[in-house]
Image (cartoon, rainbow, N blue to C red; front, side, top):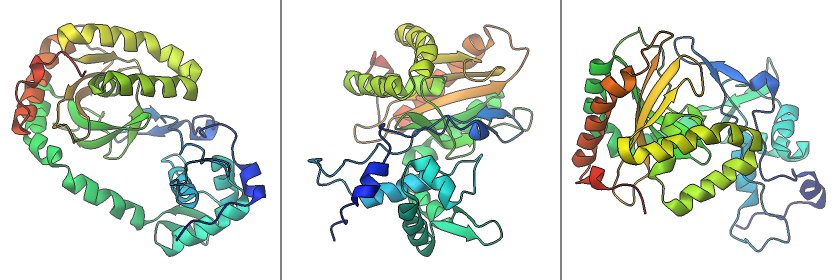
Length: 317
């Protein structure tokens, strides 16, 4: 059934910019990662603004996009939101929000708290993600290599993939409780400010990489300008060293090194990183000790996935 055309009032109330940013909300600026590490939110954009009535994209389901936009408005810092807050976050009319939250609640994707008169994500959202995780063979293939790497380096070892303008973690392991830098599966990080994000960008084709960089620049020009020098440095050094490096670029005292993991052509781009929290880390320790082990683990994972001679490739076309 074709989605009904939005009313004139709804079209006028839609946000004029292409995305709505979460980072602009001071009350949602930071969360705490497992172990108490202070982690700023990535400011991940919501869905692009849907086409208006004059758009030629007749395949775009506006109502579906709006429902997903509501679900994406919830964050670790703001797990409960009311209709008015959801309207503010998404730029959608409150009447539209009321219909969407009612429907999403009936379908199990939202739960309503009668005590607080607000909504939170329901179990239905989690059931959407599990089939994807279960079908990612790379997680099962990489796990023993990740565990070995974590034991050898005392770093947390993580797999991440790109979700539009962010990194989303799909697996993580650490050797013990002494290293607090372990992200939860499904948590996100900024793309250009982190070593794993830069590794994922390097793994993209030149055309896709430039498109993503353009979107990052338009999404947040100031942040893009601040992150660009480290991106340029990592990209220039990658051809000779094969990895990206972060010495507190995103959060002070969190050091990370990352490498793309080549996959078969139809699979998602994946990157592997090692992360450690330390205030007294020798300048060359990661490059001297962790880098060779990380590169070896990535190569073994690639071969186990059926990608041979992957490291002989200087980069994507």
